[in-house]
Picture 1 (cartoon, rainbow, N blue to C red):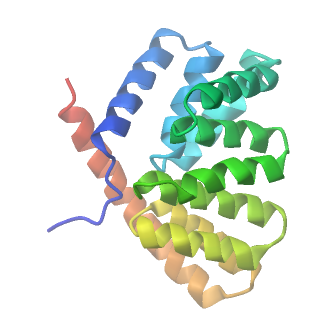
Picture 2 (cartoon, helix red, strand yellow):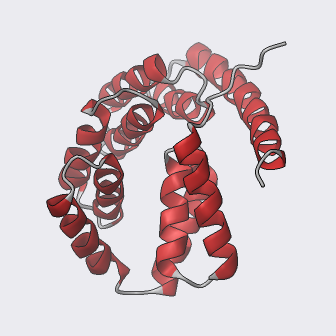
Picture 3 (cartoon, rainbow, N blue to C red):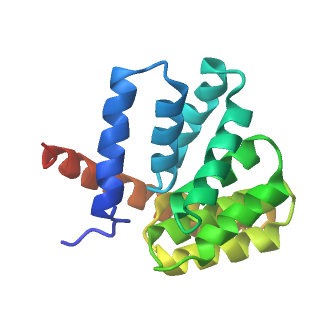
Length: 198
């Protein structure tokens, strides 16, 4: 049986392993926690990412301007690095600067080559559109994400939320069933990946 899993590319898996180790070494480090949260965000570990992100301002109350400055400098030096745009988009999102967040996330969504990073950028675009009450746009963004990453559990969860707000309850039920199945399969996949990681 081949499971339907949103597989993680080797470079992102290595990044995840690195920042997981850094957070274990520096549990109170705001940058290590933020970076691990970002990797989780573009792996589809959305709930875990949110928990870490909520912790970061408690570790450093001045983190938002510091991160804005850091990732703006990084983009100036390396404008084609999608990771910097993704992170800066999140910093703007948490600062309630949704237009700037959308601009950065859309850059990632449109960047080549297409992979899971595009899908997760669309997923977070959907979240912002939902926060703005633009549920049709949120559905569109989720659907674009799922064209790229059809096995992303959190993308199906976001689509379920958007459908719920539109009162499309049959569609909500289908997306919730899919979400639960894919989440379980991703957890099994991640466990196997850790077993193979030295």
